[in-house]
Image 1 (tube, rainbow, N blue to C red):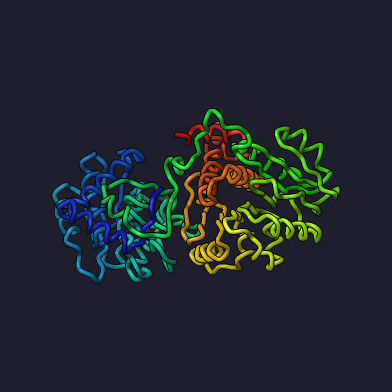
Image 2 (cartoon, one colour):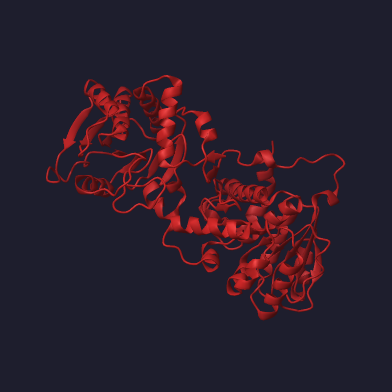
Length: 501
């Protein structure tokens, strides 16, 4: 799990690394250039013509260092320098002198009238104008050159962060539109928000050896679940465990015409490792459930078509409610009964969230530690409209803290908000999972993990990670376009095997 630090913290991290390692800042810059180079030469052939647009700060110094190294590798490189009102940094000047002695073609952009064909003979364009410390919108010559870069018919790569993009607040104005962003050591908060995707593109991290102790001791509310993710919290099984060890979950799901959601969530729950599963459904779904999920026990509602009469709740370890439920009056009353009488952490999804949004008094009945799993529209109904993605994150934190529960905002980089206001972005998953039923599968997985007595936040982290990983494992065999929710369940065992230590 990686921390996501603010722009100020990143600046302090650089300074601390230089001090503790007893090196010069130019040495750290050289290290950063080298790691960027390693990524670049793996991605782009040396026959491709590379252009680098540099500012006069340290990000521009990075660009000049990369230019020199690319020349040494045999790449044809052209550099353009855009000077601003501030004096060049010392490290920029050092790398500028080094670049001049290495046959790099260097031009200076002084005004908008020079030419409109700067990049006509370039295949790949690298942005090294501004780094993560930028705190104001681009104007004048810098704004114009970014617009020109964005209009060039080239592949675009940003060093550390696209110029014009603020690392941890809303960006206003012109921003470089990168196809690839190579971030040093840690990701930026901006990378996880949908509104910034057109600028960030595909991003990856490169390790430049920044001080690990500083990172470990830095305080933050934002984290990225990457690599092996939450494998350290997976529970181990012993020889004498039995089905009673792993909990008895109740899923309250389905209605006439929506029994598919009930089947998907149930199949996912039994695949997640719980001991026993009971599914409460309307009578119309009895044959469907008994034949589709033979591992589950069935509890039948009095009603033929919808939830009206939940079973006794006292014998269950946890409850998952919502997929395919419908929002009829009797179902609202039945959900209220569940919330009033089951006071342990549970999972609330789909129509159960919609019912709560329409009946706000039910919010106060949600048991602490519950996991809520809204998609963006469901979240908007719960928390209200947001001005932008940053504002939505604040609303997400506020809702989790208000309910003292875990709120899982589904999407690319699903955001998991904890009761203390921390937010964890998930690193697994792919666009193929944007299809009906995948949320029902997640509900089943989370319910199964809660039944096994995972702490709610751990259950959310493990469940969301496994859910996305299952989708990722399915893609090489099935492709992105053909992925369906059932595939995620089918690949869940492979995900467990990959994650388990």
